[in-house]
Amino acid sequence: MLDNNLQSEKPFDLNQGKKAWVVAVDMGYGHQRTAYPLRDIALGRLVINANNYLGIPKKDKSFWHNTRSFYEFISRFRRIPFMGERVYKIYDSLQRIVGYYPKRDLSKSNFSGKMMFSFIRTGWGHDLVINLAKNPVPIISTFFAPAFMAEEFKYPAPIYCVICDADIARAWVSLNPKESEIKYFASNNWTRDRLGLYGVKPENVILTGYPLPKENIGRNLEIVKKDVSYRLLNLDPTDRYRRLYAPLIKANLGALPAMPNHPLTIMFSIGGAGAQKEIALQIIQSLKEKIKAKELRFIISVGTRQKLGEYFQRHIADLQLDGWLHLLWAPTFREYFEKFNQALRTTDILMTKPSELSFYAGLGIPIVIAPPLGSQEDFNRRWLLHVGAGVDQGDAKYTDQWLFDMLETGDLAEVAMQGFVEIEKMGTYNIEKIIQNEKVKNKN
Image (cartoon, rainbow, N blue to C red; front, side, top):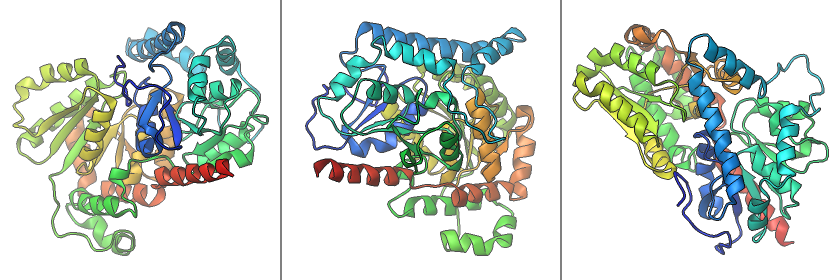
């Protein structure tokens, strides 16, 4: 059986109208979360996991499994004093994003890219591509490896790759980018410009924005505007921000409601490797008196990791927080993302490491940035601070002080509006339109 998959066990010869193959990998949440909003244009509304599909050859599955296990081990090992940080730095150097300036030609392939293609050329991913080619509609991959596999094995339809970070390493681009026909859906200006430095042809880079969930956006932004309107009331209890920026608020949201529709709510989202669970516990300890007093509601999002949920249950059982502390968990990615996206609608502050969730600041949710893990997250953090949609987390032990100071001054309301105004929110719809046009071109 497939484990923790967005898809069910079904063969590749689905015949439900030509749309697109949406391909991800279940290595952490980033690539799965990016694929989830695109399910409406996926054949059978299913996401194919390149590392875990029905009939995957044993050698391919083993290779993917070992890669995932090594990454999770390194992520956890990093917490070991002295030695852990040194080992992680060596690993991270293989996927390091170099500085953007001075602008220069970065198209030359590197060691990690050459290694990946050497594995592909020995047959890694060939079975996946052969199966997808039975129904040759466009491929949309949220990870670069399946896109490379498709091009290497001559997939007979367009290949798209969705960028799920604010900046990317050279590994996202083929060995010969000027010859490659892979098209990229760029998440922001940074990735668009970075792809140019890596040598990707301008016509193969499309600035769409990151694909955010439709259930949090609405076809005409009606859902997100409503949610931000209520959220601002909780984020600006002294009315300071709303007085200063009333014209901006009215122009973007219209009239605000008289009362919030939910209590002040914080969500702490734990990454796939569970590396920041201790930080979450420190924050809960700091805020427990305010939670007991029902001044705020706290959600711990633990994803699909049952053991991680059990860890928190053990550590918070004696706090007696009277239902105002919730664990958000589900056994599958699909159920988890459904619950997570619904919970976001009444979440006022999102605490998370700067992963793909950085783009969720576009929903008008201020991101309190937990310590980043790796080069990609360092750049995600820089981007969030650059657009004003996030703030660095203070000392977890004193969250009850610095967080409420930011609420009193209206700073978090300002951060929420910055994210809402500055970040593209229609990425999912933009990608759908491109695929629909691609379908028309394929018919002619």
